[in-house]
Length: 336
Ligand code: AQP
Image (cartoon, rainbow, N blue to C red; front, side, top):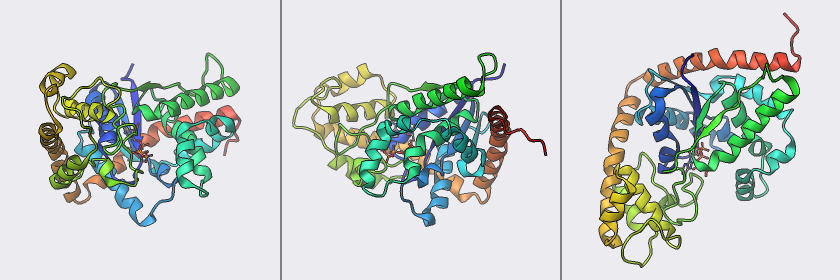
């Protein structure tokens, strides 16, 4: 038996922020040697809200380069672009036809994003979780490392796979494999710097709400200087009335590789004036190696393209047979 397979991805919309890094990429990197990994830049998802065609290709390359800069190892992982593997779109259509509409209408992220889109809600936004299900199911994925916000979509993926198996497979011969979520407690939900009750998010109109992985030191300093705090002296993880305090301490804990106990002790008597410079320095130091590596990757002509070409080949070798299996189960079997 080979290693269990992992699939995950991030959209090339806006800049990758600390939430994407701590909720997803860092976990991919930490566990990667235990798995056979497929990390995808999910560019078909990027057009489910309005997007800039002029920026799409550059943003896609940027996300792929960031995967590598964060430490994805090509010895155990394939990095590829979703739209390069046509099986993603094709399986989405087949899964659409077995997915009840009300399952999609119940998705929290759809409801939240639909409100932000006002009258301009595309069918793609509603269908986003089916595309995500196709992404995952194509690779017979065992585990999906994501942040807390994607948990509901993963449950839906399992429901869709189970429905396909029930309708068109059998217990001995399931059509699709049911994946498991892999959500780590720390960093699973990084909160906004301007409101500790909302998740850090690319679509927040305020740049001050998030730290992007490629933010230069001066920008990080400014954002931390201006981030929301409170007027209480002494910092603690465990006061539910102080969400910003919890969030900033958690960021400090993860980025400085400390335990909750040691940060609790170190910061118990601190005021914000003392803590903020410490957090800034820690953040700048943690992001520097990623930023340096990113510049190296982008400076090497043709390197990224060769990684993505190989990634596409590896992905198609798994995705195409899965698609063929689903089509056969649905009765598409005229030999040509
Ligand atoms: N704040 C977060 N904390 C922890 N994990 C997070 N993720 C996203 N935000 C946080 C995780 O990042 C991965 C990529 O998710 P995505 O491709 O759905 O990213 P996105 O939707 O483009 O990014 P945002 O910031 O979540 O965008 P908005 O909010 O604008 O839609 C996933 O594993 C996700 O869990």
